[in-house]
Length: 191
Image 1 (cartoon, rainbow, N blue to C red):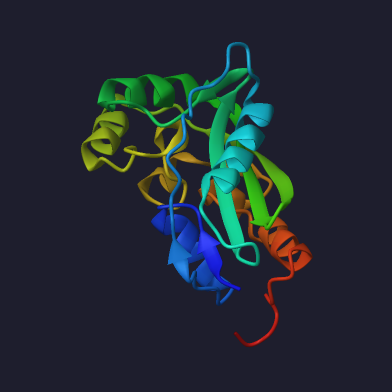
Image 2: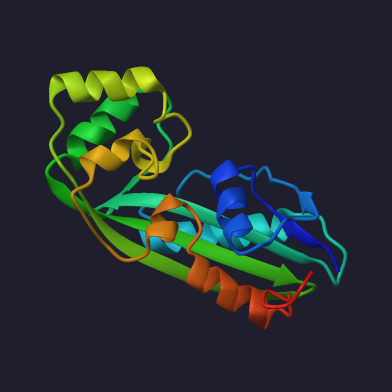
């Protein structure tokens, strides 16, 4: 049995390392992440995690872990911004409002798939022009759902959260541990 992380995210590797889990292989799948017309954020996120898990090549006894994180402002999906201009729009739209961060996790072993979603509420303060420009210049927004990383510089912009901090970062550890245990991965034993 190999443990395969179907993600290139260094944050997901770091979060797994907190549990003492080191993947045997890292195989990020290449799937289309565009939302389907009128798709809502939570089903969208769950669909992507599941599709990623199915796309990873693995042996029948291997355990594959995939996840997807989406920022939702109401019914609107704020994915990874294409450029600094889109990141600025996302951050401006999020300013002074609560939004949801959804992370869906899918674990596959053979033909079985276990899934869970973590939904957290986050409030971002309104950013001044200086804060916004400094954040954009940091490039921390690049590759981050909603255009920000709560574990980085943007933590200074988040006065309140309700939910899973690790889920907001990109891998809810309580849910992930439950899924890995259900799939037969020895989370709590020496590896």
